Each structure stands twice: as C-alpha cells, then as structure tokens.
Length: 98
Image 1 (cartoon, rainbow, N blue to C red):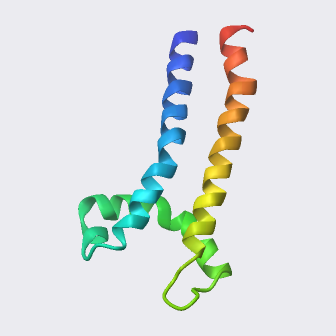
Image 2 (cartoon, helix red, strand yellow; image 1 turned 60 degrees about the vertical axis):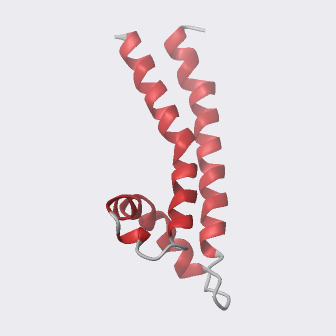
C-alpha cells in the first residue's frame, strides 16, 4: 500500500512540475493563428482558462497587451512551488517513515 501511495505522490509531483510549462505553451499558442483551436489548444484551454479568468477580470488589458496572463503565470508558478514544498515537507516523510 505504501508503494502505491509513493507512486501517487510521484505522479502528482510530476504533474505539478510540468503544469507551468504547459501554461507557457498555452500562452505561446496565442501568437499562432488557429493554434488554440487545435485539439491540444482546446485541451489546454479547458485546463488553464478557469485559472486565467479571475486574473482577466481584475487586470484589464493595456493596449494590445494582456498582462493578466503574466501575473497569472507568476502566481501559478508560486502556488505550484508552495504545493511542492508542502508535499516534500509533510507527505513524503510520512510515506518513508522519516
């Protein structure tokens, strides 16, 4: 059972590690016409649009630039770092009996 939980934690940490990269890819897709309408773009949109929406409501675009995405990326990166640290600090020692 403990091995299974260790594998689950490893998968969660893997996902947390690469979510900011996928968010950055989603931002880059806006520069290419039709990229967000592709299957990958729609999939990433389902993941990241709920995260971006509150930031877009608070921070209006400045001219052509939407800095809310940058603020959301920084906040998301910070949240993922905090979550990773919490997992390493509290969950991993429980699983390994440290």
